[in-house]
Image (cartoon, rainbow, N blue to C red; front, side):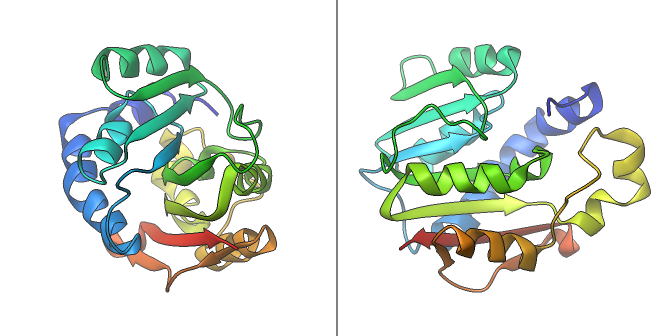
Length: 198
């Protein structure tokens, strides 16, 4: 689902960008047990390109392939990432236009909870990861999406949502096994983790 104007404002501002560059990057570096040096990384739901910049500058990827469902966000990302080793396109995480077993890592900066058929998104991520490839994820659990604020001001899907254990179980069904405990952050508003394709 595309973001509404309130969600766009919440996700596209200097505070969110600083949080991604510092706190989220640090979480992912630790979960990856280092950086992603020399790796080809796929970012699902790239928005205006801040995540791709973090993947290059803070996680050390050599190149990034990224897409978003919203063509206006992809255009903003093109401007932000001009001249960087990033391939951008409009795309859907439920139908990733990438060959099977073709990327070293996938990074999800809180996108999958926006997807009505999130299980299909997980299936596609597992398909495109190489054996031994790593998924780094940050997601919002169902109980947060069910709060008054989220129900009133956002357009997240309401049915078929997940808590952290549901998400981990779906990853495992597709051969993506956790590299440690899923961590709750920001007072339980989000959870983060890593899973490797076996």
